[in-house]
Image (cartoon, rainbow, N blue to C red; front, side):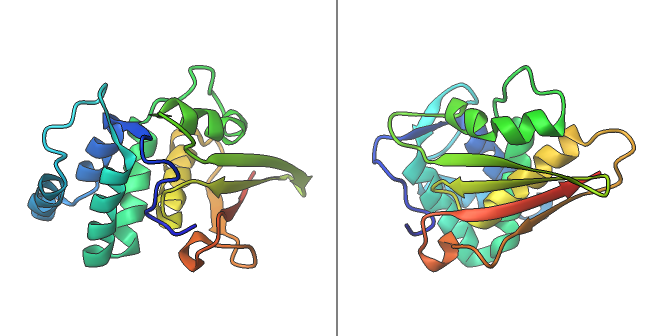
Length: 186
């Protein structure tokens, strides 16, 4: 499955995603984000309203073509701060286990993809998990989303949470149906 392509045409996403996309643009080029959203009919989005995912993906693709992967990362990072998340999340473990639930909470109208969580245990005081994303968003969006969640839920005393795209696994940038992320912290 190619990036920037929704699985079903009626799938919608909450307006927080549209607002996160706009907030990802640095202030000196925010006008570019507004122009892109305008071209795709996403003007004055409201956080509680729903919008066609494909329309947002088309806007994201245009931004990607003009500004590259960093823009997708920034959008995912901002979405982590804006997205609906389960109220019970209080730790990184909660977050990683519940990322699929959060994904479902922010979408409606059909098949929106899936995140699969695997706890890979602890080694030498480091916690390890694997997340597989089979969503319609680009993998750099996912990386930004995961980094945003890591920042939000990083435990006191943990200096860093290492999140990496597992290049030995399938990748949506290459037309595959999923991307795999390895996460380590401790």
